[in-house]
Length: 336
Length: 255
Image (cartoon, rainbow over all chains, first blue to last red):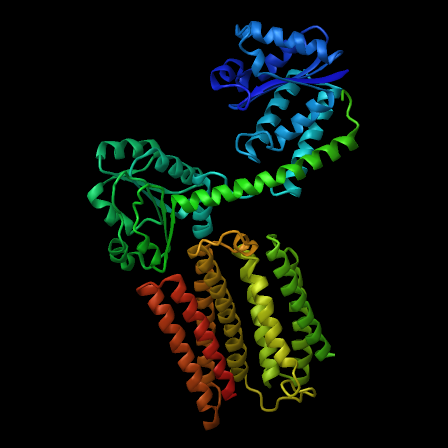
C-alpha cells in the first residue's frame, strides 16, 4: 500500500481555481467516500480550508492513482488543462512530510498559525466517520497530529503576532488582561479600524463606540459590531469611559490632541488608556503618549512588531523541519 | 536548630529568586518558584515556632525576629495573593526581598542566638506586634507589585516588548488591582495593630514608635483616600506605595 497526496493551495493556485476544488465541511466525508471508490484506492481523507484543498489517499500504486485522481478531479470541476499546473503531487515519504508541515502551520499563509491544526483534525474526523480510513491513513494522521504538537511545543513557531490587528489585541491584553471588562472607541469607520475592532471583540471586548464624520457610516459599522454610533462632535465625551481607542480617519491633521486627553483624565480617574493609531497621516498627536497613563502605538510600531514576529517564525522553519524529519524517521509508518 | 531553619528558608528563597529570574530571562514561566516559596514558608514557620516556644510569646522580641516575621508575612501574602490573581511572577520579585530581609536577620548581632522568655506579656501587645508585622507583609507585597508595574509600564511606554520578562509580567490592570487590594489589606491590619498599640500598656519610651506608626498609618490612609476619591495614575500609585513602604520601615528604629 502506498501513500499519496494531490493538492493545491494559496501558493500554487489563485482563488478562482481554489474555489472550484473547495469542499464544504459537510461534504468532506462524502467526497472521501467517492475517492475511495476509484480503482486501486483503499483509503481517503480530504482536507479543505480557504487556502488549500488536499486529497490524501492510500492506494496500491501511488503513481497510477495520482494520474487517475487528477483526471477524476478535473472532470468533476470541468477545468481541463487549467487545473493541472496548479496541482502538487507527492508520494510516500514526501506526502507524509507534507502533511506534517501542514499540521504544524509551516505551509500556511500566516506561518505558524494554529487554526490549520483543528481544520485538519476535523477533516480526518469526517473521513473517520465516513469509514474511509484504515491502517495507513489512521496511523499517518494520528502521528502527524503528535508531530504537529511537538513542533509547536519545542519551537517558537507560533510565538508573537504576525498581523497588525493581532499585535494590537495582544498589547490590549497586556494592558487590560481579559478584554471582557474593556470598552472600545473607534474613530473613523475604515476597514483597518473594523478589522482591529473585530479582533478585540472576538477576544471579549465589551462595548464598541463608533464615531465617524459621516454618522450614517458610523451607524452602519456600529450595527455590524453590535455597538453604538457616536456623533463625531461627541467622541471626547466617550473618551471619559473607554479603555481602548482605535483611530483610522482620513484626516490630514491630528484628531486627538494632548489637551483632549488631559481634559478627560480626571473623569477617568487616571485609568490606563490605550491608543491604537493606524492612520496615515497619524490621527493622534505623539504628545498624547507622554501622558502617564496613556500607551500610544502607531501603525509603524505595530507593523515593526508584526514583522519581528514573522522574522522570528521564519528562523524557526529549519528547526521545525528537523523535528518533522526526525520524528517521521522514528515512526516506520506504513505506505511510505 | 531555629537558626538552621532560617538558613534553609533563606537558601530556598535565593534558589527561588535565581531560578525564577533565569526562567523569566528565557521567556518561560517559573513553575518552581511557588513550590520553593512554599518551602520557604515552612522553614520560616519552623523558625518562628521554635522562637515562639522559647519566648513563650509571639516571636517579635528582637529586630531579627521582626525581620523574619515580616518575611513570613510577605511570603504568606504572596502565596495567598499570587496564584489567586494569576500573578505567579510576583514570587520572582518577592523572593529577593525575602532573601535581603533574612540575610540581614542572619547577620551577627541582629538575631538573639539565645532567646529568653518574654516576661509580663500582654495580649494587646502581642496583637499589636503580630497584626502590625502582618500588615507590613501585605504592604511590602504591594510595594513589590508596584515595582512590577513600573517595569511593565516602562517597557510598554518605550515599546521594548521582546524580553522574556515582558512576556511573563501580568497585565497592567491586574497588577494595579492586586496592588490596591494589598494596600487595603495592609491598611486594615495596620489599623488594628495601631489601635492595639494604643490600648496596650506603654510607657513614654514607646511614644516615638507610636508617633512613627501613626504617621505611617496617615500616609497610607491619605494614599488610599486619594486613590479612591480622586484617582491616581498607576505610576504615581506604585511610586507612592514603594516610597511609603521604605519610609515605614523607619518605625522599627523606634523599637
